[in-house]
Length: 254
Image (tube, rainbow, N blue to C red; front, side):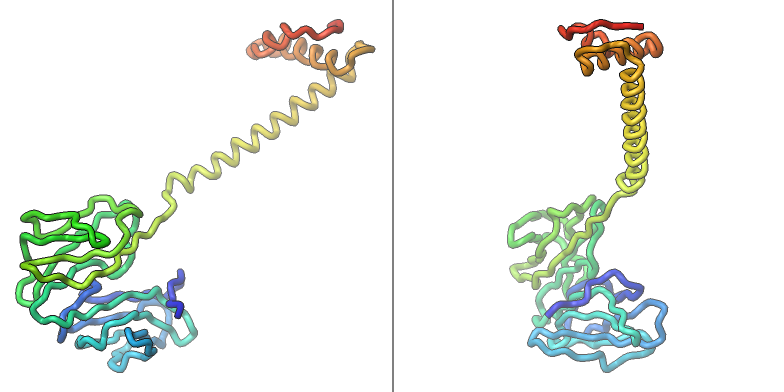
């Protein structure tokens, strides 16, 4: 099944803003956009599609149980969809959860991942894994990435006191930088100026050829006539020196 992941006027926010939750947590999923009718839809682990039963206006309220694990998105009455998010409910009441963002992280932004117990929110001596590879093992209780890149995308999990959290996917959103987008019109103008300049040069060459007194070796004569014209009328151009050394037969007339 394809999940909604489109750029639209609809969006979904999750509070608390994390993928993993403990059982009996209170989680709110709120639809935002210029629409009056909303429903929050879920695709569960066992392949069932259902709607949120506890809607208050545009907000779905969940008191989490294992069956609430799934993919959620908003749908407006006019058929607009938000991007989909994952919600995972930890079934082990004594195990940790990984605190990671629900939505994709923009490339270049900073992000912090941490490990939490139901009875203790801040932990130390936590192991962090990226795609099952240990990437941090020290006294710090969180994993900080100062500038996220596409290579940071993947599955993350944490381990505390021998117990592992479930793993969650962290997605990285790549955007076109302002510098790149703003430089496009500049290059367009440069290309336009170069194109116009080339046309002018070709027209000048054609004009000099038509005015030339050469009767033989017409092409070679035209080239030399044009070089002569450029040299004496635009003395700041010096390229003619290399061309004049070519052994081209003919005569230059003025």
